[in-house]
Image (cartoon, rainbow, N blue to C red; front, side, top):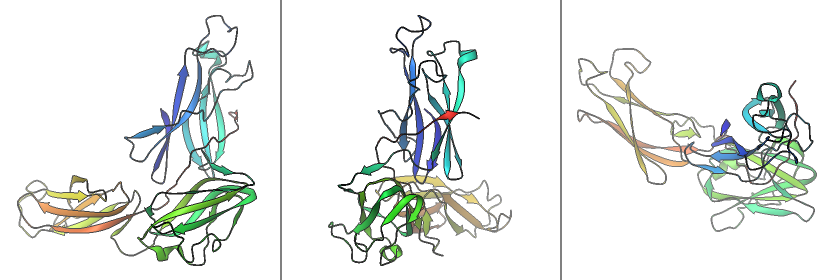
Length: 331
């Protein structure tokens, strides 16, 4: 697997699949040519646990004699403006056949975040997300609704639409758009940390992703997704060497009640200076919701405790479906 790209809380990777039991042509040329290759998707929220798609995301050319007729392996993803450049390697006749002359590099240009889609025809369709805490002030959609529309309504935990956020209270989204704002009669920010579900309605449209913009607040207890939590702790004990004589330890409780430990650092005067009595703990949370923390010093000196709220900021939610992408020679 290669070619990782982070979008919101999602890591998207490219899986290079080799099928040495298959041949690009029949009969093969040369007779001992073997192996075809294509690319599938994989995704993860933590970089440790991955889900692999079994369907082909990017396949080799069906045209015999094409430089990428046997293989099409995506190696790198590069975000360029409103597009993602997918660089891939290809073989013409088989795996490593005349690799020093026939192996080449190609380029796919794809609109941002358009790996997969939920799609509905003229009869329309809908789907609902799991329960989540949005803590957002705005939402945008990445969709192709040139011949139709997309609407969104917000549901309470009991499944009933929340007044002001119903389907009819949502302005329809049309056109081929990467970041169309979703507008209801009420601002999204009023939902705060209330758990909700989102229900999407599509007609003659494809929905690729939606993105949340976190609440902009001066409260340091609000930490954006993959943002940094930081807290300062004062210790007036006169250590000979505060960098070595004592350790600040942080204990964190996730929203799912699992626990983990981290350590702090001596920060001098709190601005990076070498002298004074300020320690800090910095931490990047990996779950949405409310976190608890306790900080204590290794010599028993009192520390601090509290909570912070990890909010969705720029979270991209992609939904499984086959999406076709074109490819062109590298220029």
